[in-house]
Amino acid sequence: MKKLTKIDIITRPGKLEELKEALNAIGVAGMTVSQVYGCGLQKGHKEVYRGQEYAINLVPKVKVETVICEIPVEKVLEVAQKVLKTGQIGDGKIFVYNVENAVRIRTGEEGDIAIIDQK
Image (cartoon, rainbow, N blue to C red; front, top):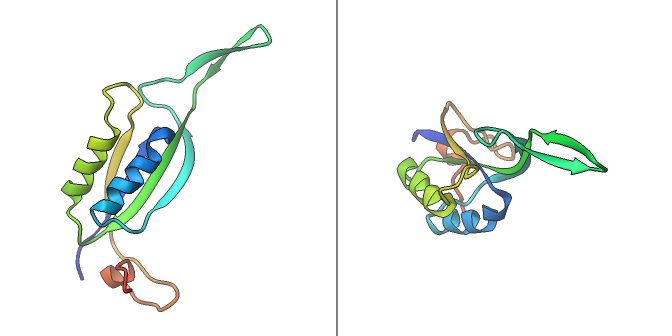
């Protein structure tokens, strides 16, 4: 069984389409996308509503999750950074995890075969 790696990319919602296209171009076919809220170095911002100032601590982001086995992790990281980097606070984070196993529920296949497109 080939090594399985999960990559989570958390970034600005406006960059999602460009990121999806760039990942598809290098062969990343499967991904899960979630709308999330978080704070990091940005620490949120302040907004005024009806004369009252409120601290908005959580900033809207998108989280793109994918599990790969054939595409080099470094290639995914390189492509994601190239697309997402603006040089401004809020560009996001990328997290890389080792995955112990994957199971395709429909067939019961396990390991790398469970995430490979069988066409």
